[in-house]
Length: 440
Image 1 (cartoon, helix red, strand yellow):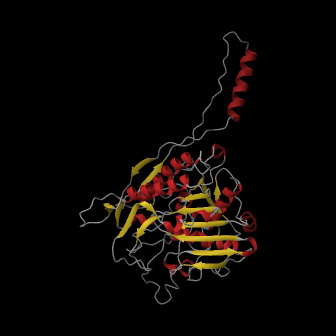
Image 2 (tube, one colour):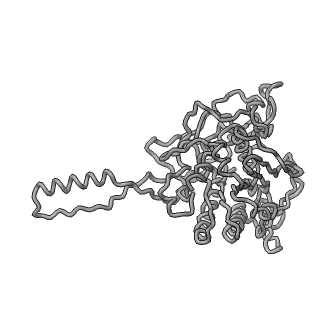
Image 3 (cartoon, helix red, strand yellow):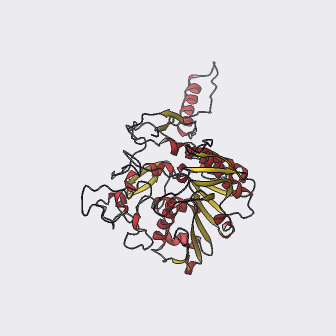
């Protein structure tokens, strides 16, 4: 059983830097004037944000969800101010700290109007009875986040190419983008692999190419798993070799959105320098248990080294891990997600594996951003972890299949509490990407 951990950080601190020295023999008038000026300056002084280290606090095995914090409390995740590689980034608002607020207008597309929605994400068609999850938008705390403008986006992407690289969450994201863009120009699919996991689309009138490349580990891997998740052997991971499925194509892309994480929790044998060095969760193999965190850090180091050393300078958005919202079990043991409204900040804790993953991601991103800043590398942190954590209501749940309760209202069905309904919360990720592109 995975223990739960929360990151509790102190509230914002206010620093004062102006000191008024009052001479002992000054008149009452001058003392009063100085006091007035001090008050005025303190009132107008901009507060500074401290970024303390997170406090890892072990919690009980259950429940997953904690009591809400007081409204005056503030919880901040480390690294949120690192979404840009330039010094100007610190002066911009943090797009990744905020709240989900009601949005009566709802999504710009429907499950009927977009043909790229896969059946297991078409929650409305599959019989989900509620629709409230469609009427929320992400609202950063200290700035305005405009809704995604598909016409403006396509104009920005004219004669360019963009790729989403990673696992099924990356595919979920690109489908959301396609659905929004289809309101201006429908995409034409020009390629798919044998399993329909990697695809390429064209927007002819804008000469824009959009791709998704399925590479769940980002590094070289031998995967013995069918489309239904049935495994015949342990995954073989080569921690010092990237997957050339995406590296060979990188030079063709102007923009890249890359991310992963969850596949590293699977049982795997680790290879380095053509030698088996250990594993993750491989009892009976007489191998050293190195842990998923070891492999994930190694993989991200390879990924970021590739970007910082490449002669091709694409704009790269690195997306942080996406939490799931399984309650009372996992996907294979009866876990479910039946909530219908978002959480407020402080009402839910990240499980420790997500905290570990995100810490690794931020640490390795910051090192790469520092190295790349002198090389003209344009790395951006797409830190969707916190805003995704607050949306337990946006998953297919049992409605990953068509009408799961049509024959038996008490039927036991497998839930999907990781991927997102389309339309759904993941649409807001595109609002953020758009804002980061426009105001880069």
